[in-house]
Amino acid sequence: MIISNRTNLAAGGSNDNIFAGSYIEFMPNDGILQFGFTDDQPVATSDNVQLDVLCGTELIASSFNPRGPGGGPPVYPDDFILSCPAPAGERIIGKARNKDASARNIWWSIMLDLV
Image 1 (cartoon, rainbow, N blue to C red):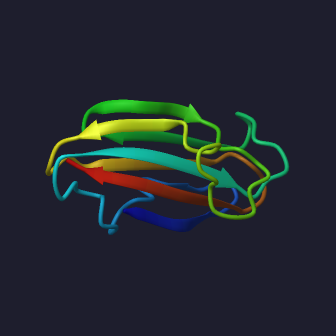
Image 2 (spheres, rainbow, N blue to C red; image 1 turned 120 degrees about the horizontal axis):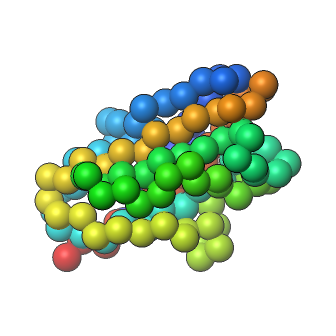
């Protein structure tokens, strides 16, 4: 299954969980997740968009910079470099921060393989 969306971040803004309200915010069953991210900026550096990805209490990525220029959904396999196993009921969190002086879009896709 693939779940995807786009999250807008205001200049200097943040989102505590870009996956909130989606099917995988709480894992429906045991499974393996693969995460893909892109953004709409010309070059991704630590000075602009940063992501923290957590599977329950396990930190998968800290201050991760998605590939730019995105301008659209992540491409498999190039943009899918993060993955984690997650048991049923595990909360999946994606914290996003925009440290840039202008608004940014983050495109994200998650491939879910239930076991």
